Amino acid sequence: MIRKDVMTKTWGNKEIVTSPFYGVIKKIMTEAKNRIYEWEPLFTIQTDEGTLVQISVGIGGIIDKLFVKEGDRVIPGAVLAYIDGDLIVSGSD
Image (cartoon, rainbow, N blue to C red; front, side):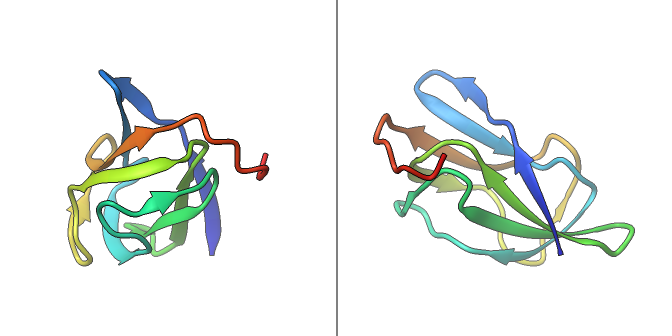
């Protein structure tokens, strides 16, 4: 399995996590309203080439909303989740 750190996009006070690949959501490792930490794996996507890729982001916060479920097809730029970012230092950098 490959690990891919994805850059989020800021919209208002939310961070937007988007898909970097064409593929299928194989696993979601969090739920809405859960706290996440920097570089924590959030999703596993099976690319159209068959590679399993674990998606993580470089921010911590609370998952505001998930926009996908397991089995959903995604394309590059598809919104996966919104995160309410915070400034809590986790020490994982």
